[in-house]
Image 1: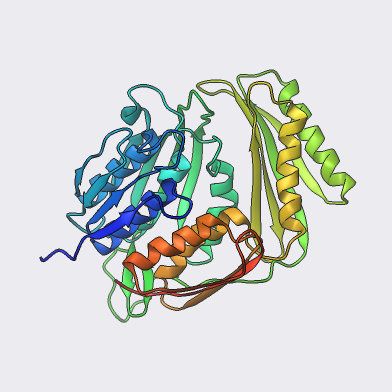
Image 2: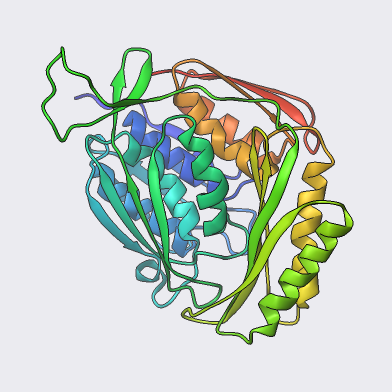
Length: 381
């Protein structure tokens, strides 16, 4: 088979972070298009591939039997040549194997990069991911389980996910398990099909279609629920975080169910993870503790992030918006969403998607303000 032309990507474009790498790799695998990335995370304090990025590269290379060049820590350049369609299977990826020791690199971000390729694989897959489950600058496991995956389920993307061990920065050592069903391209849509049985044309067939998604009205806020968590720390820490968050929300007249939780992990850590349930949408907000940060400040940060979203228009929170863009671009129809903030991440992700597909993405509004996003998906590759 003749390879399509290599897509050249300046990874310093826009927000210039790891999202460019993850989106480009995902689309490289799905479209079987070679890519050459330069200036990877060039503007970051520690430029180049960090352990979580290198783990993502090698994980997708294994799934797509790809040839890879320059895949090493701190590399600012990468060549990735996929060798096959995504292959289903049972996979284990540990960030520490790329870090020359322990690492709390985010397994949530690795999971998001692997999700669509394995969803388009022929057959079911199981992922065992080891690293940081609750770390700064990435969605915590709670956000995946309570916001991201339930929203994708409305599009037909079916994943069962569980937290097996907590992993805070800097020790990491957390573990999540995920099981997902493979997908089959069918006509103008993408559909999950049960391949465990031979089904005759006349028999009923269990099929889940990846559908366009419309999420423009969030409706009334029903409640906020969540947990304040401390790993290997005294019980008063999660209790203080939970108490402060409950009091702040109650003062605003908002019903909430937030409880403290102590857990055992590879190292100490703390944080609070909130889910806002609206009539038609979910949104998530969190804050991670760190040495010297009072418990009350951890709670205040998460509640303030919720309040900013709640006081604006837009059904989709600023974190979910850019993560929905790629699955919307792959569906066979028109999707739309209103967002509480147009971020540079959203704009950058749209730019990278356009390098690989003919999906039409229209973003109305200014950066930093609420906006309206319309996506005309490509339907098939």
